[in-house]
Figure 1 (cartoon, one colour):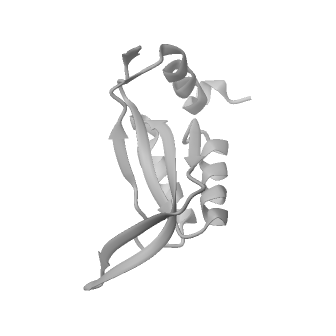
Figure 2 (cartoon, helix red, strand yellow):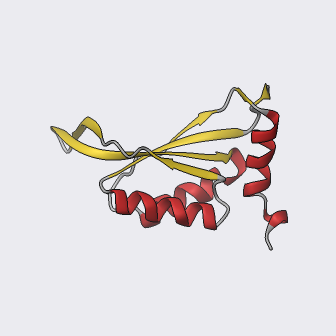
Figure 3 (cartoon, rainbow, N blue to C red):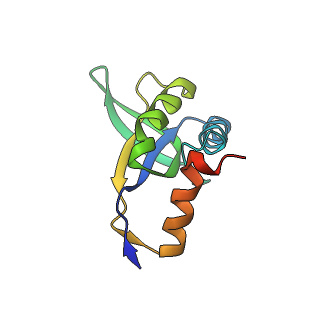
Length: 114
């Protein structure tokens, strides 16, 4: 176990499984993320939007990346997302397996593009 450094988990919710899969594939393909997990059970979201309390059933994505890729990842999520204001919350990874964190860094590195 080592310190997580600049690694991040990003939370994004989507209105459909199809949208979540499309965004996940795009950000991993473009090396903006090493991995995107999609929680297949819908989450229930209760939120305030345009002065009203709303409720929605959504799919949660957990995207692993690093701090250098965050701005480009956010732009791509916004470009592909159907919401006016998609959730995009980046949480620091405090620690993790050295092998996993090394893989994460290699997966988002442009040096490894073939």
